Length: 375
Image 1 (cartoon, rainbow, N blue to C red):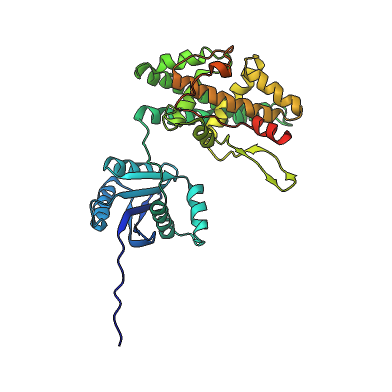
Image 2 (image 1 turned 135 degrees about the horizontal axis):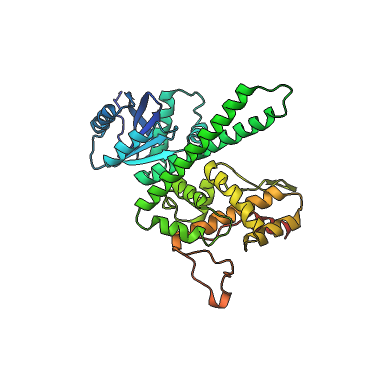
């Protein structure tokens, strides 16, 4: 006797929406995950990347959200700035929005065996990722931080163009034949770039002045560290949301690309290096200050630099990177505590150990890892 077996229904634990962003449209995939950890795509749709379509996307999500008591998570891949307006609208609508890096999403999809790449597949992969994982909630930057970030990034771009222009100007002075037209263009362009950079600096000062206590706190720190300028700290604040995005030093280090990668297998010991998979604007901002604090013999940066060089005199770049990392950690700590830098500060002894701040935790540096290897 044949019997018709009804498909067993399992309780849905979470609704998940994956969004693949582009300049023109947004591809959405709506899925569920049940108590057996099975992820099922229920629907998919494309919306234009406009405010009106963002409002329609909310109605579409609620249409498939059968049980209003079940949470909805939204996962968006960070694609330039194209995702920001959509993410901000959904965040204000009360959804749990997570923004993941493209590399993070790509690695996840490879682990799931999703070898093909289309916008629809990407949206489904992001939806599945949000369903299976507990991703951190995205917090939009405040308007003044967003403006600071845009200004400091544009200043870097203008400065790079200025450097290239001055190098071309210098090269043409030694060329076989003179080209006055090119000389005039280079000189005029360099002058215009200087004016734009100066105007950006003025605007940055105005923003700092408008925010209560921000300018004073910045000046308190930079005035106490010889070799570190205001622009360096402002860039760090703009790229990290005034360090509010991080609860620990290790999170900040990983975000900045200073996290250490070890390469060991059996008896083979490879190079120890930083990942560089992080915010390149932070590393760029710390490069010159790291040279300056060593040049001006600021402790403890000079001591760290000398220790690294003592082990290998040829690795000056590695020593500079170690100083950059330490400088970032100290600036983070000073900002969180609201204190100025004390070059003579020494940690208390074990008998009178100072309690570790709640926002930070011990983080191993390249120097510590190499000490372990030698041991």
